Length: 274
Image 1 (tube, rainbow, N blue to C red):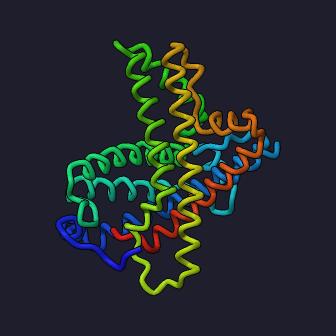
Image 2: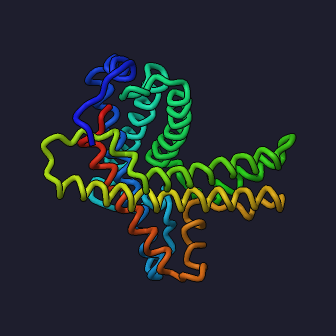
């Protein structure tokens, strides 16, 4: 965990100044809220106490809107995710922080994250405006069905699923290797604080990787079977973990890991170099 960086990436990253830092920290904070809520819902599913609520983004938003000032909180999360997309867009255009932040592969990755968070932000804001009726599982199946009807749709869906699965493996491997340390500036933080962030980053990243890899695997299976019903959103993916040989305890472990990732996102909002 370094005290700073250098090179072209840092100079490019400075072009957004305080606005770029503001969008990054707001975005990471909003992401943390969603992951903590999804983890909590997944934990309820594992113990049979979910009350029919989905353990996904839609379920998390319904949980949030039921709290005091819940409507305002949902709008705030949506705005935070817009900030997340804008931050990633600035990285794609100007380069990310760090000596390698201006490399084409880094810019391309940031562009992909921009699209991802823009879609998530749109979904959250649509929910806030009263348009979030369908579950994530339904949206996943319907989207897969439309994609399969396209020319070479089976190949497109299979490629998308493979990409998501590979992304999940990469997320898990990077978490295990603690590559997130290179993005943190924790000068003055005691050793126990650094170890805590390590624990959050590793545990949370592994759980997030499992979810992505599993969801991607189901999408590949849907393509092979030419059956959109085999595609699973986050809720169905998490519930499928309870059907493994490990039983509900694998789902418990992943649910706790997702909550850890949410807290890790808040730590990143505090100490990430942007």
